[in-house]
Length: 224
Image (tube, rainbow, N blue to C red; front, side):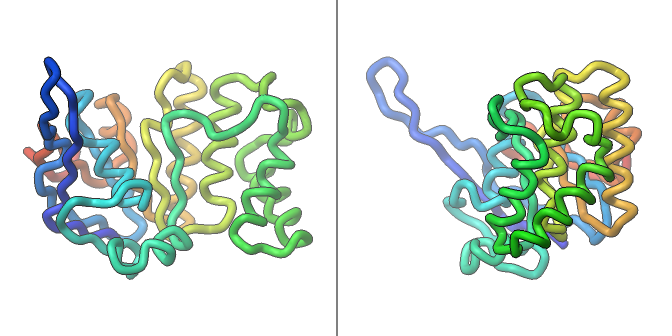
C-alpha cells in the first residue's frame, strides 16, 4: 500500500550568520502492506514528521520515489491526496465550530454531495462516539474528544491510507485507550494506518510492524 525508495529532504538553516543545509531525511526505504498498522518511531528531530509530510504531499521530496495506494507521489500528488487521510499533531479544528459542521464541511471538500456529506457525518459521529457533544463548540471539548474528532475528519472520505502523527500525544490514559480502540477498528475495516509515536507501549500494543528512524536514516525495522 505504501512503498518508499530513497526519500530525501534537506532544509536550509542559518547558524552564526552562515546558511547551511540540514539533511532531515537522508534516503529512507520501507514498505507498508495493505490493512497494516505501521509504526514510525524515533527521537525528536529524527525525521519522522518530515517523512510523513512528504508521503502526505505536504512537502516535496528532494529525491527518491514513493507510491501510496497505487498513486505516484511525485507524478500525481493530487491522486495521492484523494486516497489518503492525514491527521497532524496539532488539531485542525476551530474553537467556534462544532463536530457536525466540520465533518460535513470536510466531506464536501472531497466533492461529496451535501445530502451524502450529512449522512457521512452522522455515521462518523456514531462511529467515534461524538454524539454527546457533536453540536457543542469545539472550544469546549476535552483533549480526547478533540483528538477523536481530528481522526473522524481524517477518515470521513473513506481513504485507503490514514497518516496519524502522534495521535495520542498529551492524552490521559483513558483517552489513549479509547484512541487505540479506534485505530484498531479502522484497521479491521481494511484501512492501512501509518502512525508516528514516542510511546513504546503504544507501538508494542498497536503495530504489526515498526520502523525506527534516527538522524534521517532507518536504523531498524521489524515486528515490535
